[in-house]
Length: 194
Image (cartoon, rainbow, N blue to C red; front, top):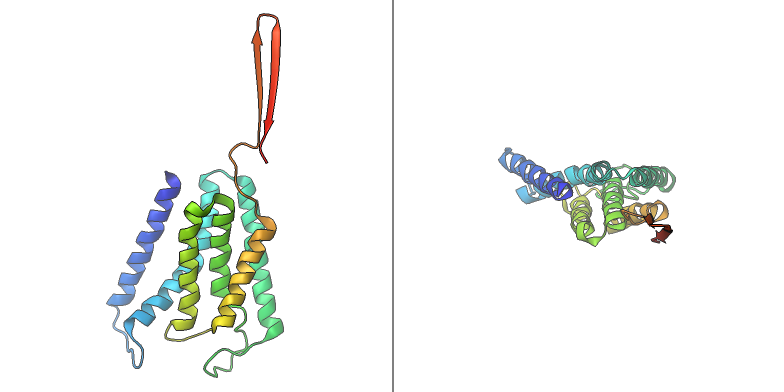
């Protein structure tokens, strides 16, 4: 129940942020308002998805999940920013900036989304992936067009790959030990889930 409320809260924040963007007076020039909304949505979701992933581990008191999230998300950030410095791919539209590959927004969003899916299943993961895909599209189709498809795919691969290295599916009970007694009989039971 608490997890569902977290996702509802995230959706309300998203709608609220979209309303703020729509209400602003923008000098759109050759761009339409939806492009600004898309870019703003991507900016918010690239932080919101990992924040939801981390908060989910805290709500569930899943301390192992918290550790796995920190390792996978940290690895994703380190790899992303290292590749940006090593590859030095120029951003689209001749901006003279050489940090396009991979997309940091996309790797952040996909790291959070893949963590939710890998740790807690597709029931929640599908919505997180939908948000991460939105972030990827926003990086290509927003008014600034900061990335091309290869930058976005690279970011997604880094985010998902780092998660699958460190994250295991969540189970509420890994092992169960039972004990019962009846008159002079004693019974011990053991069950382990893999």
